[in-house]
Length: 310
Image 1 (cartoon, helix red, strand yellow):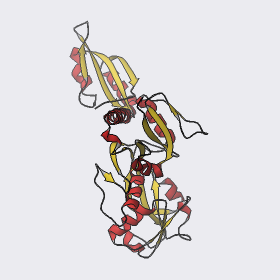
Image 2 (cartoon, one colour; image 1 turned 135 degrees about the vertical axis):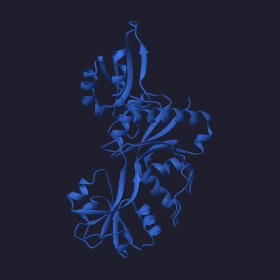
Image 3 (cartoon, helix red, strand yellow; image 1 turned 45 degrees about the vertical axis):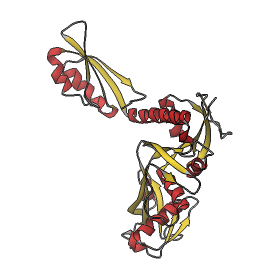
Image 4 (cartoon, one colour; image 1 turned 60 degrees about the vertical axis):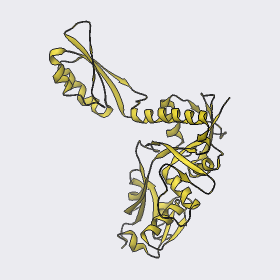
């Protein structure tokens, strides 16, 4: 039997990734004692790999595909192509060992379904106002190579030091500034740090080894996986609404309904009535349902969505 070797990010993205796969229809069972979680698809073999290392193992062909952030792809590529400030081709990213191909943008993070930012931050009371002010300064970060590439593009000479963690506490005694990942900025504010620039934005990507994609079975399997994962992302935060309404009141109801394109309207056995089915943002439901009822809609049903295939 053919097997797809798939890397699942271990660490902060692990739980969110497993939840995303569940909504896509794949149940992954991870154990604290094993780096090889079980999955209810006999054609997939999972391995837990830190997101920081995923691009390297996919490029090397150890894994056929994996999920990791654009930040760690950029870090890997900066190390594979030292001295290059220009971004690689978005469709084929060559490294010293092989090429990785991005298959799907999956916009989710540890705490939310959105992008994260790697930001350049300095102490609140420092005199630094822009990146150019940091000429000759020391920058602490986990994202060393991408940070070096960022300052190289700006023509600013700095000393970039690797940080093993707790990066926010290092300025001003251990570093002049930091490059750190943030979703909300709350941790930076709590440590009295001020953002002066965004180094890069990142979201999770499904990437594949270019050579693995030359196999037709692997290519099809990954295309189907990407389709289902993207469909699960699209469904996040959305629900379905169906209701019945008299034909005479239909336009008033339709005027209240946003939709991906337009609502589906179906005739009922009673020709005076129609059924309406649509998809809306979940956060709007609590305001919308009373308005629909006031517009004389009946039999209003809200239902959850796992996937939306566009």
